[in-house]
Every structure is written in C-alpha cells, then in structure tokens.
Image (cartoon, rainbow, N blue to C red; front, side, top):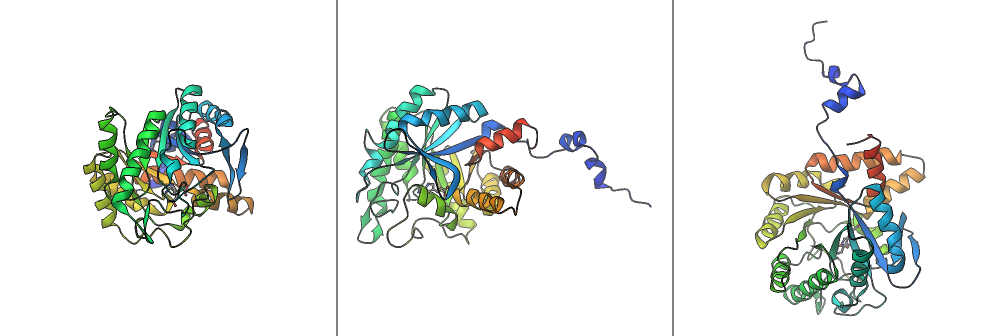
Length: 327
Ligand code: PBG
C-alpha cells in the first residue's frame, strides 16, 4: 500500500520512542507540600489524603530525609497552628508553628530548598485568607499581615516565599517588606493564577482551613476565565514575582500554556489535594492504575509548559523517573 507517512515508524521500539520524546522531566523540577503540626512525636495520616501525614516539628526530619534520598530537593511548608484567631496572628508569630519548622528544617536538612506558603486561612478563626471587615476580606489591611508573614518565614529560614492568598498587590507588598529588611535575594513564587476550586477540598480537611461562612470566590478566580488568568500573571510579574504559579494543575493545562507563552519567568503548577485524592480513591477501588495515572497527570503539566511541579506524589514520581518510566 502506498502510504508515505507512517507515524508508527517512530513508535517501534522503546529506545526509539524515548529518542523522539518531546517532554523531558527531571527530579529537580519537583516540589513536595508538607503539613507541620503542633505537638511532639506526631505523625498522623490525613484521612482525605491517604499516604500523606501531618508531622510535628520533631518528627519532620524523617520525611525530609526520605524526600532527599528520593532526589526531591524542595518542599513547600504549611503550618497548622493549635490556636486560631480573627487576625491570624499565628501566621506571623516569631515562634509560630511554621517558623519553628523552618528553623528545624534548616538545621537538620541544610541542603533542602525550603519554600513557605504565605496565607492566613490556616491561622484565622473564620478560615478566610485575610482579615475581615464585616463579612468581607479587607484586601489592603491584609497586605501588611501577609508581608509580615513572609518576612517571619524568611527570618526563620525559608529560602523562598509563595503567597497563596490572592489579595491584590500582595507580591509588591511582600517584595518591599523583604527588600527593606535586607532580603533582596529571596525569591517570591506567587500563586498568580489560583482558582476558586473544589479540588482543594481534601487540603482544607488536612489543614482545617475551610471558611466558616461563605466561600473564596471574592478573591480566588472564576474558573471560566482565561484572559483574566493572564492579567493576574502579568500583574504579579510586574510587581516582582520571580515565578508564577497556576493552580490547580490537572484541569488547567490550557492556562499553564497560556502563562508560559506570555511571560518570561519560570512557571509552576500545583497538582492539588483533590487531584491526588481522586487518583488514590479510584486506584483503591481498583478502577485505575495509580502509578500510570500519576505519571500522565505529571507529564501533562510539563507538556503544558510548567517548569516546576508541586505534588503530593513527588517521591513516587521521582522513583518513576529513576526507573525510566517517565522522564
Ligand atoms: C492556602 C492554600 C490552599 C491550598 C494551598 N494553599 C487552600 C485554599 O486556597 O483553600 C490548596 C492546596 C491543595 O488543595 O492541595 N490558601
């Protein structure tokens, strides 16, 4: 049969398939989100995220070492405080939970790259990502507290800060604060394109950070919007963001690509708790192959253009890369 174009020619052997592979993944692009909690000798499984645990500061090292041994060199730390209040004071306390975690992590694993999630929802009694005026989140009042939070994390040992609150102007507020205290060299990775998403459900259980009333739609983005995603990303770059993130990852590949094509900074994608939980649940029911789905999810984010992939599967993905299953 006369058929000049035969795409199957390049799929004949594993060597050839790998030779022509378009997307290359490296372990150095992976970051792992870790929850740190109060108390001693705590390692408790998060029921909504099977295989994920909350660690107390004194137990955290075992997880950090495990990650480093697997070749994952970067973690994103979340603190879960014992007490919450109206103004989220635990977020910027000098001896707050995440600040103590940074001090300990810096001491026990100096080679690990430590990123701080900067937000108030884990620390406020009402569960919103900023301080309230009536039932509204007060944008401008929140900025100073976010800047204080970022500064306290950097002073405690964070190598990078990642604001996830979605207040307007927070990248500039954080940048100015860090610069004024001599931390000009500390990068800001902004959760620039962050949607009001049902995919965060399991995280909110993990961090007990669900809002007590209302939702986050007045600050997180409406997921119907693509041009607005670009507006957010460009604004954050203008304010001094060194890296911009798209979140969630799995249902938002088009926006990872959009942001990648229209900015000149590295792009991150956060494969959030709901993505992980769905893969775990379906695998447990015997309906999907967990490792296979995990690999496809990761590769799709890189194919879409992400440079950094934040995932609860970081360690398992590192193993797949070592084994040559992806990469
Ligand atoms: C804090 C924050 C959230 C996540 C990351 N930072 C929760 C939220 O915005 O409600 C979600 C991460 C995940 O679902 O894995 N604002």
